[in-house]
Image (cartoon, rainbow, N blue to C red; front, side, top):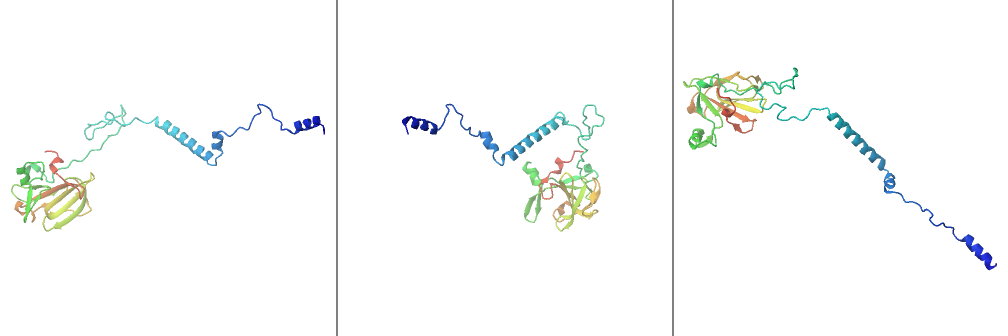
Length: 246
């Protein structure tokens, strides 16, 4: 084979290439992401969340603005109506709240024979509110009431509620406990006679018993020991802080 023919054959066998020929374009990051099996479900959930958010925003645009001190009518008297403009159908913002009363017909006719123990009071006042039983002195966590003539008297419910306990205790006498809707509990001790039963509903001012004597405070004669508690096992509260002055 001549040298000319070899050159021709070599040229035919040589790979053909073109300057500037395009090479295969690799996948972009987005195409690689979409190739994943979980890609389309994830995108669907994101789109659904966006649509739901837009719907909630659209619905909330028609709602009233949040309540402030100006539009909730702070300082309204109980039972007073707060109106929305001149709307005649506006409802009261709060129902009438029942105030606690002293558990007697006329508090002004009674004597406070032992006050509530106030840790912030003077030493003389605190001394008056200590109960001596045997060799023990205990702070008095209620208010004791008695008639000036030391006669028995009717004991009334200080608030409406449900009778949750009726017991006879050898130290404090008959005891009645009433639980109220505001989570307060009133306790009536040193009763000689009980006129209510457990689990009955009573209204404010109903007669629940008669004041009598007990072993713990026998030196006080016929009297009522009245307590107010924050719940059945809660701390005792001074009744004078809850009952309006008469």
